[in-house]
Length: 321
Image (cartoon, rainbow, N blue to C red; front, side):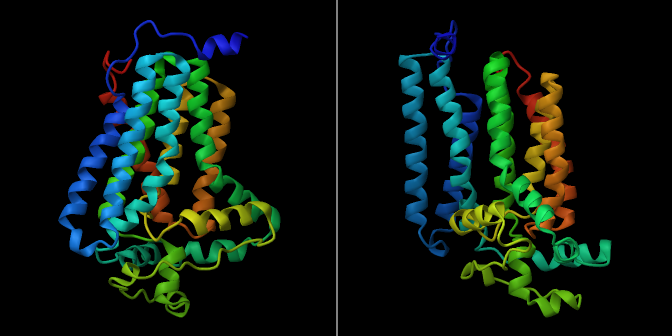
């Protein structure tokens, strides 16, 4: 009964307007709507993209109305859960926008070759093909959204007074990455290597594929232990939601950095160690499965720190506390 009472406890000072995180979604919706209108003649399915945005705002508004009627912790959690759940819907949308721009992977692959003298994303899985290691890599990469849920729920149950601020930092980080992805068409090794040809990649030749991804979204066969459970899970996830987009910087790494810093704020050793270990593995798994170049990972670490610092400063007001 105590947990039921916790969920339905009426808030003493209910939030009347939109959450800061919801305003982030509104802002991103306005920005990308303007982009869609500007690129209308070049975007297949532009009308469906606008319709999707309308539905997203309606759902967000509906949960706001429910919260206003019953301003309790459960209805607040529902608003937060919707924002997190919709992140996977917004992700493929970045491909719809950036594919009209010339692909830039050849610059990033060349930089990778210049810095490391090879293509780590091509060699990593070849050097360590073992079943246990492969499954560990795919398990970690697929745990991305689980980490979001774990950190968010920790704040919901243990530090509820900070939930709105933490949600703003998480959602703000995601959409800051999405803005970059909308404007920076880098697909990552799993798509570029196939488009450029493995013979070229192995020879250190990185051709400009131009607008190839405007009409193609095929990816390489995933490396590693193909009979593994997590391998198959990721194979299904890629088939349903992955697109040739969002490689630089790595949002998987960057957002996990944000989650680690939020975990450290709680002073919970278990939570901090859990997220910290997952971050270390995330840096490796993104390269192992060929989702990212190593430079994407390095950039993700830096950008994650910057986004956290900036968003925490922005949220450091009575409005977010």
